[in-house]
Every structure is written in C-alpha cells, then in structure tokens.
Image (tube, rainbow, N blue to C red; front, top):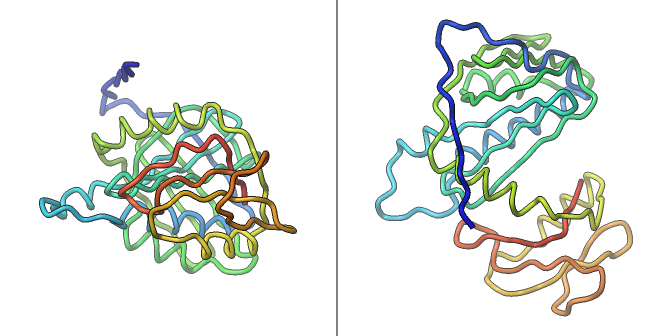
Length: 227
C-alpha cells in the first residue's frame, strides 16, 4: 500500500482564522496534559550514534481543530512514542492545524496553573497564545519535521480500526502504566476490577502488548485505552 501526502505552502502575508479560542477546564489538568505532550516531543527514548541535537529541537506539538474537537499531538524525536490530547466541547472551534514549539517560557506558564486556575488558549494558523492568572505567552508556528509527516499517516492507518476496550480513571491509568515492563516480550492486558493487569495468555477481551515500550518497537494493537 502506498500513502501519498500532499502539502500546500501557506502564503505568509495571509492572516489565518482562529482555530480555537476558549478556556480549557479544568485548567490545571489541561496544563499538565500539554506539559506531558511537550515532554514527549523533547524526549528521545532511543539514541542512535548519528543523532544530532537539531532533530530534538525540531520536535514540537501539533494542534488540529475540526469544529468538534481540538487535538494536540506529538511524537518523540525518535518517532517511537506518540501522545495525543483530545479536548471535546471546549471553546469556539474552527478548522485547520498548526505546529508550534512549547518553549521554556510556555512550560513555565503552564506549570503555574494549579487547582481551579483558569487557562485560556487561542490557536491560530500562525501560532498559539496562552493566558493564565499569572502570565501569558505566545508561540509562533515552526516547521513540521519531515519524519512526523509519515508518522501521522501511519498513526491514522493504525488507529482507524481501533475499538475501545477499556476506560480507566486517572489513578488506575497511572498504576497500569507504571506496571508495564520495558523488556521485549508478548503479553496481554485484561480487565481486573476497575483497572487492567498483564497476563501471559490471550483471552477474548484481552489487549495484546507486542514488543517493548520504547522506540525500538511499534505496537499495532487493535484495542484502545482511554484514561
């Protein structure tokens, strides 16, 4: 199967419309989720001998709006880990996407959002603007890494047939992720109380975990987790 991706150059002198504008609630939780995306985009889980710092600097989250959902997503610099945040029914939504850097200044603003503090986000084609009680910061659009283009196409193909197998709350999600082994080997996740546990045997409702967690392998499991 051949995947063809067509890209169109945006005219620099054309002001783009607002893709999203509104408050993210709860603000502290949204801020932490964006910080995690930024961390994924800056963390290399596998370092080949020929790696240079330039590739790490080019890894930045992508924001996409489609009038129903604001999606923020990122790959790790090694393209082995993909993270996504979907915000439903939040603010005013348009259509389009932009790729921005979550700089040190932006991460400082996000880290300052606590408890019930409001977090206001504006997303345009030319960048984003964050506003909180203690500060604000703007980020401009940056080039999309070439490796991410093929990565997004592959993620779309892999997740197209995914079905929801489990929904975990915050505590159970954290516990399950902490128990995941880093060694290579086949295992399956099965329901256990309000959470999930790993087993060495497949079952009718189990979720396969092929390979290891890291950039040396990729998972094509047809199940999905939401937490």
